[in-house]
Image (cartoon, rainbow, N blue to C red; front, side, top):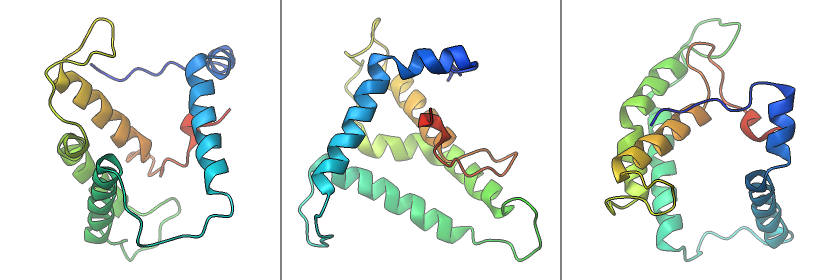
Length: 147
């Protein structure tokens, strides 16, 4: 299943901003934010299995960033080593996402159901696209949820 841009025009953006999915994402972000207000940062927290697996993937991404240090040359826009890291991510996105998700055959949350492999490929695509664009050396600054 390939990724398809669905927000192309101002009309599409308005439609997205009034959708149930948009409101659910915004409510989740606000809920987490409200729970964290005035909370101290702690290093000795006990995490759920799901959070531990997400942290494991983030640690692997951070390590890969260390493996591709910035090039020492003048550049007007971004650092060209981002392209090498991005290629690494493209090559490893499915295996990284499979750390978090477990093979259950088909997904029961889509209609019609899709295979685990298709779902994993889609999520890996979102992961890859979320960090930016290697052609423009654009680091993906959160524009995906901007309104």
